[in-house]
Image (tube, rainbow, N blue to C red; front, side, top):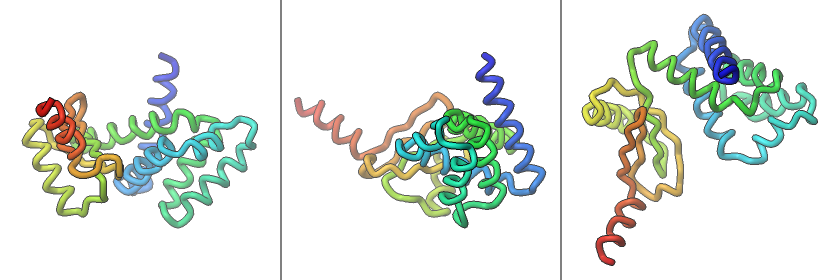
Length: 177
C-alpha cells in the first residue's frame, strides 16, 4: 500500500508540474512513449535502475536519450524520477499520470498495439469506434509492436478488443483442427 501511495504521489506531482507548465497533453504523451520504451528495452531499464550507477550518470542517460526528442519539461520530469532512484516505478508512475490526465478530460485511456504507427485520422476514427464499443469517451495511446503483424489490440480499462491478424490466424487454425 505504501508503494501505491508513493507511485500515486509521484504521478500527482508530475501531473501538476506538466499542468502548471501548460504542456500536460504533450508531456503526458511523451512520458507514455518513454514508459513503453523503458519497458521494452532491458539494457536501458538495467542502466536506469542500477543503484551502482551514479544518479548524475542516470540523469545523463535520460538527457542523451530524450535530448531534442522530448520537451524540456518531460526530460526534467523523467530525470527527477530517475535521479531519485525510482526508475523501476517509472512505468507505473507514468501510467497513473496518463489515467489522471485522461480523467481530467473525462476520458478513458485506450492502449492500442499496432504493427505500424497510426496517423491522426486513424487515431480519431479508432477513438470514435472504441468509444462506441465501450460506451466511454476514449483517448487513444498507440504502442508500435511489430509482433502484432497487422490489425490492432486495444485495451480500455478491463476490456480487451483483439482484432489482430495473429489472433485471426490462430482462430482459423483452431477451426481447421
